[in-house]
Image (cartoon, rainbow, N blue to C red; front, side):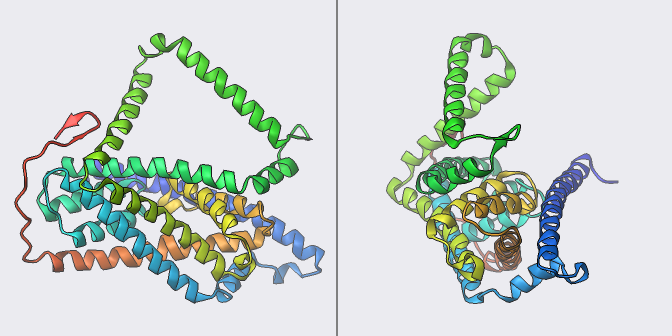
Length: 366
């Protein structure tokens, strides 16, 4: 009989999978309706107008040299992520193998394709097993690693909006409307600014009462843990190197998106800034808990491509090319390879003796 935990994980998998499938279907349905209208305008018979066939044809037009380059920068990004993780684990007094950090990182991505956010636990558990470290300690380092990622995605998002401000606001001015009236981007920014000031003012005014609410207390504790996690970076051996690896991780992520741009003829002529915007929107699509960002990635990547005049059909095709190249090909092939290599490389491995150090994450001494 299945245990309650296994049953819960199975239910989570199907729930998240269903979310992704539903969103992807809605994206496909809307895009297919627009594609059928376009075919009708061009006089193409309905039986010869298939969006799926159009996407298949798009894969045939891809320059696979650039897809190969996607695999290369995928590997480079994970080399930096593994190096950064090793630096965090060393603050615990352990000397982990770099190959273990690299391969377990890839396994974590592979696991996320099954159950979103499960990858962090699988990654930590696998590393703990091969390095003989208490799993809760490894989870602490993964928590710090993810905190840095959260900070990074906000920085990259701000950079994208700063560099591509004209395209984004032009889209808002043209398409965003309420009750049939166009809402200017400047008005939206003004409304958001005023709302933010009012919100912060209310939080400050009622802060004592709010702190009695358990939910608010949890948010405050998470924020404190976030700050304490960032302080951990100062305790690594070379903080500047940690920061450089962090920059390289996200730079390589960007190049994965940009190389997919270059691989597909309808997007090959777009600017590097356009690729940055699409990358950021796609990254937020990955945050939503669906397997590998299925559906949510397509939706937000298409939206960002529309800022730069890419047609719905081509944006849907590009989103699939990018999704299958990165989320499926890289993560599945990489994950399977890592699962094969890990036991081989650790057959006679004995972890190095540890040094007794104190490590603190989220306010708990390890």
